[in-house]
Length: 459
Image (cartoon, rainbow, N blue to C red; front, side, top):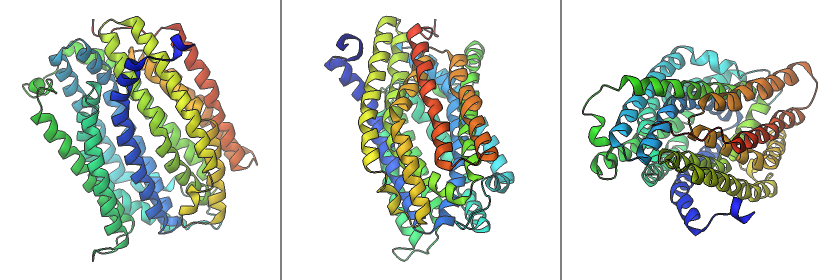
C-alpha cells in the first residue's frame, strides 16, 4: 500500500513545487470569481443569469483555445525534459498560431451571433427572472468581454508554456496581481464607489478585461527579462517558421485534444442548456453551484495538470517506471484530498447560496446541487488524474474517447432526454447525469493500469 500509493518526502516536495503555485493561483482566481458572482448576484437574478450565460460561452472559447495548445504542450514538456530548448521554442510558435486562429474565429462568431447563443439559455422563467432583462444584461456583458479575448489568448500561450517547463510560480504571481486589480475594480465599477459611475454588469466586464491585460503584461515582461529561466524565448522569435514534421506531429497528436476540449466544453454547455429548459431559476441555481464548484475544483485540477508536467518530463527523459509510479501516487493523493474537501462542501452547502440576492427556491436548488457535487468529488478527482496521465504520453485519441465522447454519449444525451421527455425533478435529473462520472472514473483506472499511455513522443 505505502510503496504503491504513498510517496517519500522528495516526491511530495516535487509535487508541491509544481502543484502549489497552480493551486494558489487558481484558488485566488476562483475566490475572486466567487466574489464576482456574489457582487453581480447582489444586483438581482437577471444580471446574475445574464453574466452566467455569457460565462458559459466564454468558457467554451477558453477551452477551445486551451485544447488547441494542448498538443503542443505535450511536446513542450517532453522537449524540456530532454533539455532541447529549440524544440520548446518551436512548440511555442505552433501553439501561438493555433490559439490565435481559435481566438479570431471565436471573436467573430460571438460578435455577430452572440445574442443568438444567449437566447438558447433563456426559457420560461416560472416567476424567477425576466427573459428580456436577462438577454440585455448578457448582451452588454458579452460586448465588453470580447475585448478581453486578446490578453486571454496571449496569456494562455505564454503561461501554458511556462507551466510546461515547470515555471508555475510566475503565472501564479501574475494571476494574484490581476485578482486584486479585478476585485478592486469590481467594487468600484459595479456599485459606483469612490465617485465612479454605477455600471453594474458592464463594470464587471470592464474590471475583468483590465485585470487580464495586467496579468498578461506581467507574464510577458518576466519571460523576456529572465532568459536564463526561459531559454526557449531566445529562439522563439528568431524565425516565424515552424518545422513541418513537428507541426504535423503536433497536429496529429493535438487535433484529438483540440476536438476533445471543444466537444467537452460544448457538452457541459449543452447540459446546462438542457437544464435551462426548466426555467431561469434553474439557470441561477446552476450559476451558484458552478461558481462554488470551480472554487474547490482547483485542487484536483492542479494535481492533474501537475501530472501532465511531471510525468511528461519523466517520459521525455525515458524514466518510464518512475513515470508510472508517480502517476499512481499523484492520483491517490488527489482522491484523498478531495474526500476531505467533499466533506467540507457537505457541511457548507447551505451557507454559500445565502450570500446571493435571489429567491429562496433558487438557494434551495443550489444547496442540493452542491451536495451532489460533494458526493461525486472523489470520482471527479480520479477521472481527472486519469485523463492527464493518458494525455502525458500523447495518447490523444484515447483521451478524446475517454473524455468528451463519453460525456456526449452519456451525460449530454441523458440530460437532453430527462429534461424534455420526463417529469423528474431537476435534482434527480442532475444526480443521474452526474452519476455517469463514477463509471468514467472506473474506465480511467483500467486504462491507466494497462500502461498503454507510456510513450516518449520526442524520439
